[in-house]
Length: 211
Picture 1 (cartoon, rainbow, N blue to C red):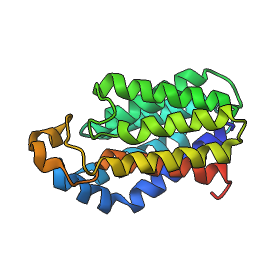
Picture 2: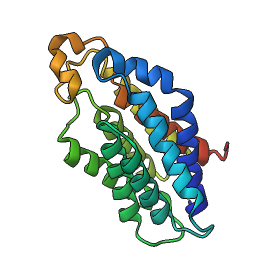
Picture 3: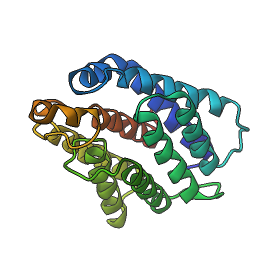
Picture 4: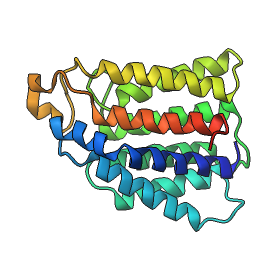
């Protein structure tokens, strides 16, 4: 993937989270602040605006770090720092290369996950975005190790991310505002896991050259 394709990923993610903002907010209203959809739409909208100012030949690393900075600067709540950190860590992992192969992308996704884990101090089972992102990254890496191309690896990541997202429903939250609810957080889909799946779906769309 080159810089334009990484930018297409961010733009597609912005489209998907904006289109689904109402559902994300409803999920968050059940166990959180009720602003996740609005925050995500605002943050990724800012990321797209920042990408519009980049030169055509911006590297993949520059695209992701620029998007991450914009999200942090414009997004409230916990989602801004978490998504911003994920993108900036991924961008830093890519360095200044002009084209990224699937192995390089796998490394960037792992760096993004590491950043989210460090900032949020969350592990799988806490009912957070990590419950979707961690299995997705593992599935992407396994697919790449099997010799799959980008579209197949992205599909594996989406499938694993969706499965991880669904597993948050019976969980009791151990992080964030949802943890204040204790057992009453059980039975609800985690909004962060839901938005993570949308970002993974955006990658799959780009991999399939559908956007």
